[in-house]
Length: 444
Image (tube, rainbow, N blue to C red; front, side, top):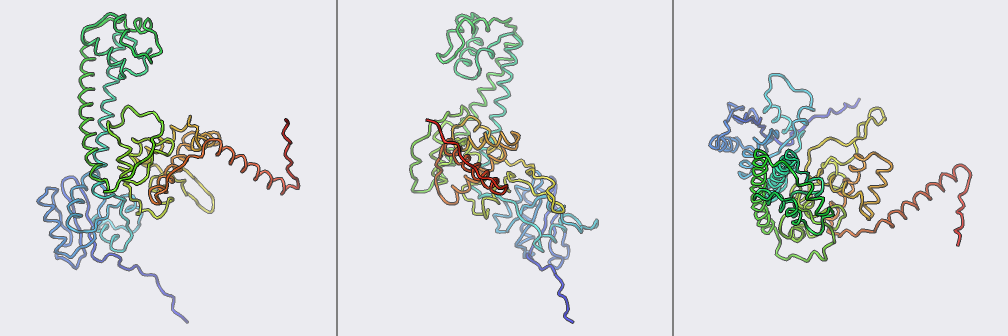
């Protein structure tokens, strides 16, 4: 009688170590045969991190696994990577999903065992230059959010003085709004004179603006308004510094032979966009113009590229890329029954940018706009936004991996294809029921 072979786990990474990351200290575990004390504690000081790397090198360690705990892993990750170690940044959820953990085993030992048998996979982390670009881009987004708070403070101070400028002007940080607010801070109180500062594109008349500017002009509210304007200007200066830093970093990432992105499409430019030709720099990095995709402007393209980089060879296909973004349908199935098809919750910034771009397609006269509106008629709006963002992600993956340009076929092309699909399915359905579709002849 033949003996049945027993499946045995083989060592995939025999020279692996596990690190339990902490804010004050890190616990490191190596294989038991490498040192008399296979588990050691190192403090988070730079000198201790250098000693940690020397100890791993003395133990002939090649692969290191660590959990992504806050931002405390970043200095150690960068140090070990510069020393030549293969570092895997693993998700804490994936570690907990593997059963069999004993209570007397430390987290670092458990990470070392799982990594040795190849049961852990590292998170996606782009190249060092893209990580630096990502840090500056996120810093810029943070400054924009802080600046927006002080716009609300301006509106609050004006409302407390019963200056109803926001009811006649849509944006108080626009050209007209800023001229009026700064004239008020300079001492002007006459509504008629302030109304003459309006731009010709403002729909409200000078009389309406003058009526909205009649307030009580209390000193404490004027003081709060002045503070808000000064802080708004201070964050504006910091944003200009970020733009200069982004421009220099993007210039360093340009190849030698940069092509021409071609004619720029007529789309409204965001007022929060960087003050340089961002589209040309992104075209030089990627080799394709992502802004030709409807709904994606230069700012959205920067957010996506700064998060993932132009090289998507790490992802096997567009499906893997969409799954990493958290935009693909869920696969919660039990007993052959689909329990839930909802996409997983994720804090991926690239996915959030694509969802905002998908929501902006609601009034677009393009094939993607027609696709989004068709989904909104069939699904609820959040699901339609996620599905459209999934389509945008697949288009971006195809453009970056194959170097092809996106050409919009137009809204009529999409509607005609949808019409043909409906007729095709109706004809098949009628044939199964023993009927035949007969088109009604068009009248002259």
